[in-house]
Length: 167
Image 1: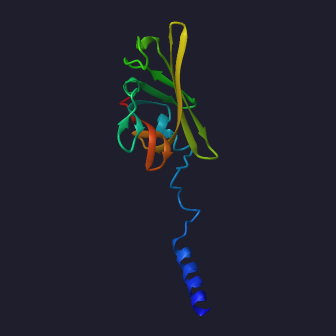
Image 2: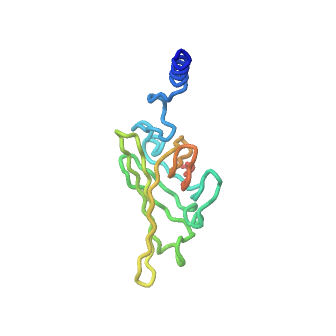
Image 3: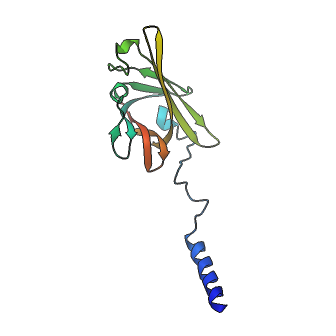
């Protein structure tokens, strides 16, 4: 009986030393504030180019349609969630890139501290509209780069990486 009591006490001490603290920074999510958003728009307007569009960021595997994204320029403006997109020369669809429409926006959920980027590309071919849409969560932010991704911190799957352009 005394041995069982010692095992229980030792187990309780072990778990108290190595258990998770709920107040620790979440491994899965960074909470962003309104002050952090200044890094996105520089307090006025800031342009970003896409460094890469990945199917698996951790393994460096680009999506097949990455070339049609990496030549686009995204401009974020203070006070607006709509992003001005200057499309590049490479189309995501067969045909002329000038016929392709790209829209983007972001949403900031202040209470949760979450930021999501949504991108849509569409083109009309032979009377049929082809559309691609996706939304990714902001997982890393600095003054010169942002990563929006699915997956958890340190294990990014689909990801789009933006690098600050020289304004």
